[in-house]
Length: 71
Image (cartoon, rainbow, N blue to C red; front, side):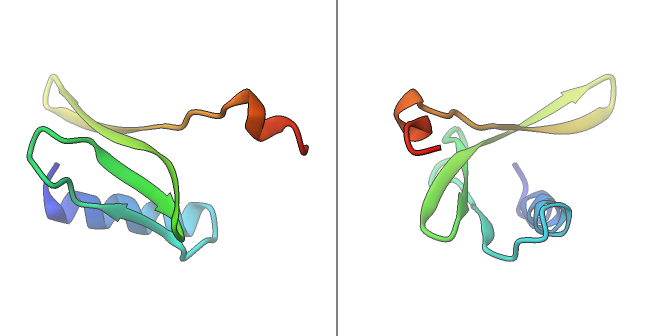
């Protein structure tokens, strides 16, 4: 994922969820996942997909059953 794309997706997520604590860290290696966090808390992985000349981004967020115990 390109640095300018990371910046645009980060801005989009911050605006959409009204949360400036959302951050997207550039991957350490080109093949490494792109991690999304809120503050210091890791929340998911961002994927880039390109098909037929169209680019889309997917945010995969896993919620563990133990995270739901206090809800």
